[in-house]
Length: 233
Ligand code: HEC
Figure 1 (cartoon, rainbow, N blue to C red):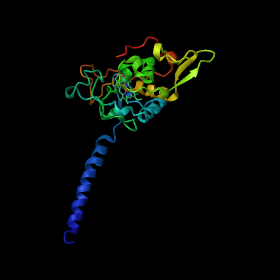
Figure 2: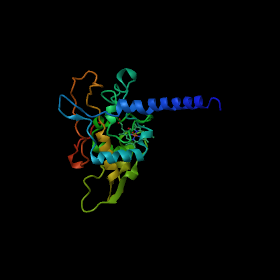
Figure 3: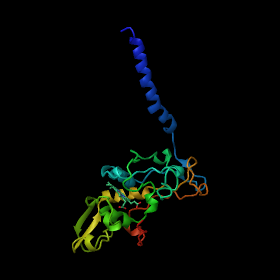
Figure 4: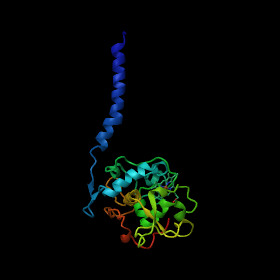
């Protein structure tokens, strides 16, 4: 083994340089990212998700939504994501600092969901679409998720969060369809997905600096939801 030490050094430096590139550099670049204080509103962004929305992230993960939906908006000159309304600005690493794991996704069989909490704010719509996408989006190829709902016999009064279903999708008379905790958590998560806040490293193209609401996600309390459904798409 005349070249033993040389071989060892060669292997060592190859592995060490890939460790530096793949582990050390990203850690130095992004590891210390913190929320920023927005000058206009004095609020911080991003804010941690509410407990229910955090639970919803795990439901999103468990049900494979990531196989068809991405959560990353490309810059304006790098595709048509912003023109399609998938986000007001490009996504940056700061957007994801509270997500574990980050649900970036690579497939776009369905639309990008970075901004779905702003694009589709209606709870009714979100529940009906999850229960069966054909109700709100006829011809959709998204699979239905009826197991996130429970069909049960109506008691003395119909449940306030029962889905308002008509026609072929309506349950048998005397029964109602109500969202389970998983469905409520998932919808809380979907409504918490917003990219309406301009950041120093990613301003909203054409918007005044510092605008945006950074508002927390709407609750899953059906009574608080507006009765008028937002336009389907
Ligand atoms: C097989 C692929 C597929 C899977 C899996 C899937 N979706 Fe979809 N999704 C679609 C397609 C296609 C559309 C567009 C048509 C429609 O609105 O139904 C869509 C639309 C949506 C929309 C509306 C987006 C908009 O811009 O209007 C939401 C919200 C959504 N999906 C959430 C989910 C969630 C949550 C899951 C997991 C529980 C999921 N999807 C799983 C394919 C999928």
